[in-house]
Length: 230
Length: 345
Image 1 (tube, each protein chain N blue to C red):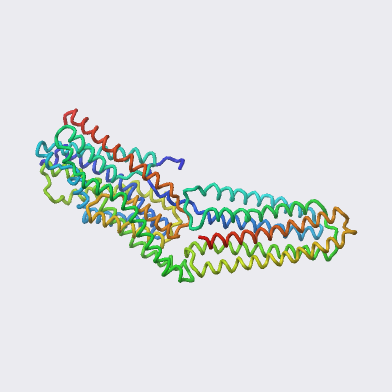
Image 2: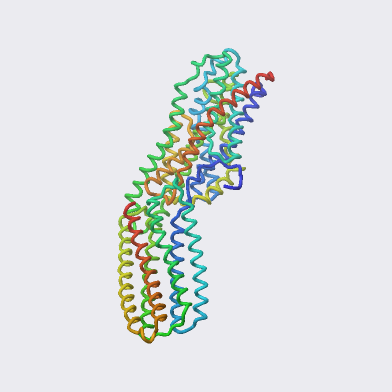
């Protein structure tokens, strides 16, 4: 309230809702991973210029996500009463924020070295990326249900719907894990043709992409805690 | 015609100023919730507020007005001594309350007009007792304790009632529906009704803050009997609507854009609870703050899980404003009274 007006009101009792920026923040993560997926396809086709371009775009998205995160945190002072525990909300915001962080990291690793592996590994990477993106998009869908939950003030049916999506995210993350392990094996089987640096680069890339799905699962898990402990 | 006694004219002008302030801010606060939820447009809300505020003031405002005029300070025993003392004292009270409200509003402090006028009238009683016109024991301390008690009880009652209403809506309606947005649409109609209800309630309670002193002065000068003349209530109602029309609409706009969180089901719960508590107090002749009751009701809806974020720090601001307002208004009123006597009005 910087502007002084002839107003006497106590209706600043209505604090700004953290749930809207929370949804926007989740979408930033999704956006970053969609860009990363695009970058991965460009990478596999050897289009390094496009990879660089997308890397810069992902950097910008990650920064926007950070700003949103800071806004949400700064508006949650101790006097704010939410329909959920504020601590639960913050502890689910953290892994959610890591989604765009990890996408940024993976995208950075893409720019470091050209793709020089077999067709088999290429397919593996596309599959890993694809499954990771699906996990993140399912996670976005999960966060979307929060607004409906608030609208009905946590009706049993909506809570069940939300919890069902948490299970879906977990299931998809598990599938990413399987692909991740398989791909890692393949990379090491080709260690002679790839060379030390090549193996290191690809294995690091696999880990970074896998982390994205891990963080989505982690955030989904925290979201469940938040909804159930309410 | 003695109605044109300069004291009466001054009391009318000061009363109108108070009424203007009440309409510009307090009424706007009460109505802003209906705009925030999208139930009514600004234009519609002003029409609803004008009609029902006026009706509440004119038809149901006399009980609280009597309390402000005669319930706290024994004006009859003062006017036995000199009827002008009462008129001057009440003028001092309404000037002091108006001054404090103006100052508080400039600094955006959540001060209640009710608390200000009660404090100011008490200040007049105290200075009268200090000057030996009445005994300290003659001030109706019992009534005063009841009034102050109602200031604590009314927000709590609002919270409780709103909590219950929203919990019922939540349990029986929101949790059983597939389409909560459709339910919200259906509540728009109900919220229009509660907007009328809250305007009526507000009019019935807050008009006293403006015209209670005026009636006291008229009564002491024997220009009004035991019942409050209709024109006094009309002055109050008119002043409040004027405040709404000339400034309140801007306050409503500001508030309405800020509180989009309050959907019709939530708005209905908070408004119905607030209006019921206020009408109950009007019936019991107790002057309370509608705005503070509304805050209690909003917190009640929040406690029932109906709001995304409620900032409880407002509670402290309100408590501080209680503690400050009554003594400040009382002291100012006593000083103004002394000054008016000094210049020999």
